[in-house]
Image (cartoon, rainbow, N blue to C red; front, top):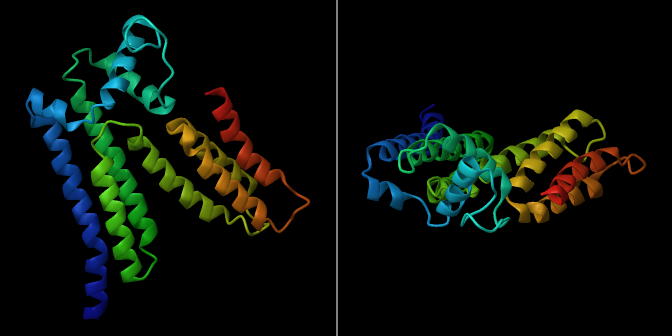
Length: 229
């Protein structure tokens, strides 16, 4: 009994660490002075912030106010625009953006840890350590990876749920995974290589080679998204 309790305690320790990290990070965004607040984000994050503000103020997709730009990953920019609609103060808006970023990072951690609970204590501990390192490293950057990480975790969970090596996998689940991968593609355009790997997995493990509708549904959505973006 004590051994079981010890294992449970070890498994919930990363959850506690993640919760403390999220609480402290959110608090720091709201109590930090202006200079400290600005320094929390990566320098490249302000590239996104500037474009989002210009879209709200001028309706133009531009960084410098003159030339049109497309040097960004679109999903994170789309997510940022409502913040600049609601908050017109260039410093105040950083606080809710930072809070939202931490919430996304915490979501990544909680989903990932919940998925890892099924594994042995050693595997769980190693994987949880790597997961927490990613969350802490990227959770407050203000970059597109903030939204990419939770989408990747959800995509991997969905991939296991559809079990592509079984013919009984529901078509709707495959379409749902395709939609999630479309969001992954919008979050990071070079994620197309990951999508290719997943599609190859579905094709190679498909036990009904005469029915290619599932791989088609899985691959078509993200590639249409990539072509349009």
